[in-house]
Image (cartoon, rainbow over all chains, first blue to last red; front, side, top):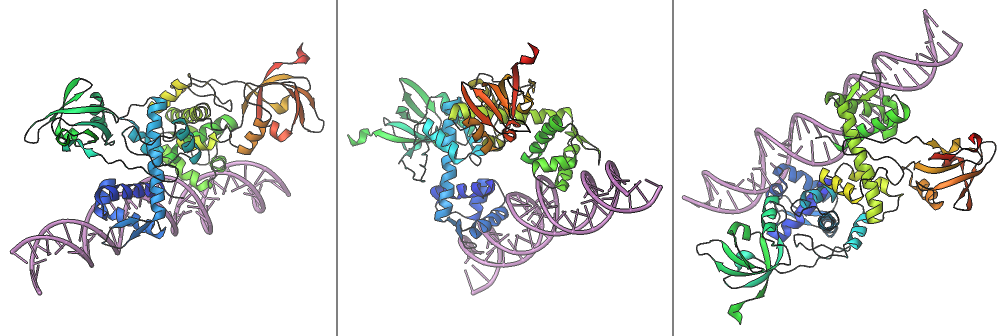
Length: 223
Length: 223
DNA sequence: AAATAAATTTAGGCATAACTAAATTATATA
DNA sequence: TATATAATTTAGTTATGCCTAAATTTATTT
């Protein structure tokens, strides 16, 4: 059986592969908050288990088997996040840390029961897609809120889940996934965004906006 | 912070203290399925942390701090077992293994939310008492079913939770905690028990009966 | 193309928690 | 009381997974 650490490495490699493309030892080490030497060590073990492809100085790639493990852990994590919110009322800014520990520990049986309880959901509380039992993941094409221009309308698709304080802040504006809003004005010189959300005007700083991803509903330039 | 292994040792010392009285290295090792030398090693670490009292060749005792940790873990375990049964419908013969892993990992917040969801329960699905948030545990005085004589009526108080096959067997007779039954006949020469449960007569082997603990309702000898 | 800078790997250590084998202590028996 | 048996402890090993420091490889700059 795989150790929790090995599972975390595989999950991180998967996520970095999505985000950055090529996954180097250094990037992986930084992401996992370990030293590069530690990452090299674990990568070698994962290679011996045929879960990753690896040539020294050349970066890591997941094999099919490694990807399956990664998606399984990600599925656990996201199902758990949603379950904790829906079934136990845990605030959305706290579920990431909790799920981070539980994801390595729940059985397939409990996974299936949570899935059923939740009605076979496809997204977690932060809008991230939940892979199905077979590891199939539905990708949505969202753009960072910082790409929006004056007058554009959209729906929140996803927010980064790792910063608890940021999530509380975003939550205070009700900017949960599925929430619609319209950009009233983007302040010049990389300034903040004034948006209209359910009739209320609120100002969102650019740093915060970077962590909010949206699906566009209407683009007035194309009318 | 304590490691999972350390928590398991403290929990086991607590349980053995209840069951056997004095806890020797050997008994503890056998219970935890490790070699005696491993137990000695961990006991020394726990002593350094002031969680146990220990003199070599003299056995182990929990300090107040150690007992508090043990009860906290036992609370997690039993709340989780009940939660898994009630909220997710996990069969009662499977919850022990699941809880064994989860007990070390859930936060106090989740513990409190499960407790609330369950209505502040005092017993787990096997009838074992759940310590409250302050570590206060209500002991019930039950006797093994093997102590029963012909004609005695009683209610199931508790069954051992660790053997999954045994639990399925007990469950097949509906002998869940809270269930009433009457002893029709105890076969001579250490034989099996014939009982009347909800009008049905069933035969329970002595080995099984040893793992069922009951509270007496009526003793015809004392009428 | 050589020199410098950056990234990566190797080598050697540490802590945890298990193990085996040998030595020690305690207990029971003759 | 001496000895045999059983229990316990010590000593030394192994496997994880992290670390630091030094060596190596790759990439960039002049």
